[in-house]
Image 1 (cartoon, rainbow, N blue to C red):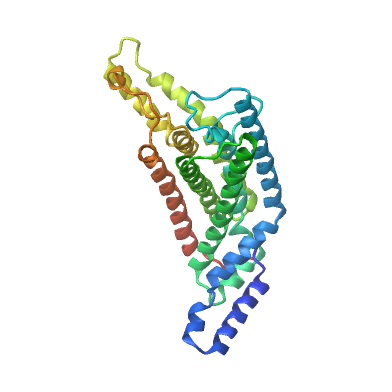
Image 2 (image 1 turned 90 degrees about the vertical axis):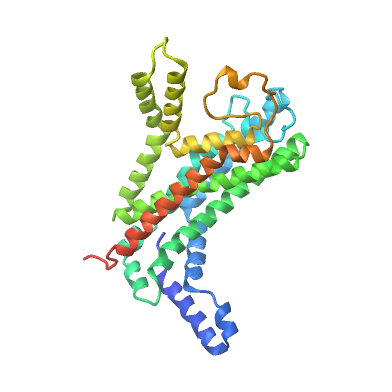
Length: 344
């Protein structure tokens, strides 16, 4: 999304003139920095764009469909075994005619992140607005940070709005309010979804800095998303068939095989997000790895409390946050080292 350089620089100049006219240190401290002006301008441009409007409409319709599917499943008696967390099942169950809410977030969330970031920098460079903007007293890091901050703020608003919409319509449909634990589980699920979409946002911004053409950066981001969504599972099946132990192998060898495949599967951001959301929204999930009969002997089948579920998915949180930070760090270094003058 290209910035309107004239209006942006005009706002910065008017703000500085107002600060100079005020003549007080308090007024200067309260002034809005160029960073936040760029954030506001980028945020408003995203909201007014047809790209975001169309994508938001698709996600909204998908969420409405998932709500009706979940409510139909609840009214039809297609519930999980544990009825103590009935409200959470609005996000996890389906009557079979429409996927649940988690599935839509896993599938459409990356598309929203890619759509917001694939032309964040190269569109400015191609239009010649980047060199004009950087010729003003604006820091380079303010520009790239503002691009990421504005898009991530928009992602946060959309994710939480959709999550609260699903919760509100579910409450209206079933007439069953969430308990405090259910509310916090939904909250942490929405936070995790923000980081998941933020990873794809940073990845698309990275490609936007690396490639000059917006079409190339968009195709690169979509290709990586399709790989992890479709082809990565096929590759893992080939690896599984190649390294699978024989039927008479020892228990330890089978456990090592299962742990290896689980580790390879968790290299996919979609798998990390899926495991974490399943654990948060399904308290009956007590483990995410292989276990033996001796480990479950005399174990009490009961749901985990919220603290234990968070400890179970903390590595997934850490992995998604680390992937997001790494992508942004690479984007930051690449942008700070690139030549920003427009090419003839």
